[in-house]
Image (cartoon, rainbow over all chains, first blue to last red):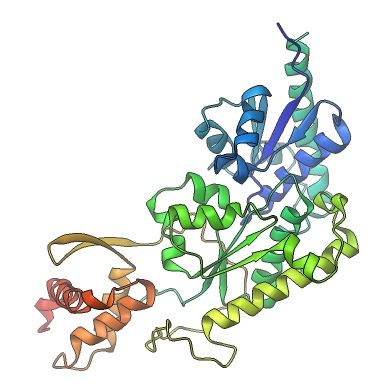
Length: 136
Length: 241
């Protein structure tokens, strides 16, 4: 089995609710801090609008989606390109485990929001390890 | 009591995850929603718009919409025009900042910092200016605006997301074809509440109200009027209307 060298992390980046921003923050924590060598992100709207490079990327790299709400737009948009996400995470699930972490606002999630994002990012990073490891 | 939404401008940000200007697009939109034009603007998540149903995709037909894109691929604009309606305005963040001589730091993608936030204010000012132009608040009367604006109660100033709100759509027969009309029910109710006894000017009043949220081709105005009067009477004929 060929080694899967890179995993795409695609958050929904929801504009209306702060948990969308937490998902976006979590994605950046994974691709820039936790697993910078084996993960990357791609613009969700570019992908959904049919950009050939973005579509080629999700066809060749396993994709993990992070959604801010139950509408699961990141998951559904990736699915709509004909690719099944390798894993998907809902920020709300992690929030239920850490209800003390009150997210400040959409523009700036604040320190509690970043901490909540870190909990999500840790889960995503573990999933990245599982996917990369499965290719060894 | 009619719960008719005030005429607002829709803002759709690309939120591009790969680029600093994608991050600035969402920050700038939120600044307009929360601080600069809170009573005049509303947003919808672009991914929801892309996966949404007909009600969500009616967004740009209901609200004149400004697409705020991070780069010249203009995903927000293209998506809006593909699934809903032509945008009323557009801002391309990287182009705007280049014109202003502002160099974009790629690190702003995750951490805008003071310089990135300052750049986002340049973007939000450009958006707010377009909002004012669309609503005719820049002192210039827009011919595309109906003179008959709905009377709106003063609203508390807060950022608005139309996520899940569902814009009401009705299908009615106009000149033998089924046509989708946005916000028909509250508009009929509004006219009913305002109409003096005797129905004087019912057709023109209904047409003016419907044109607030719908595009009515000039050549079809008479057909619309007839259909709207018919729909009105279906609902209110029992009241002597």
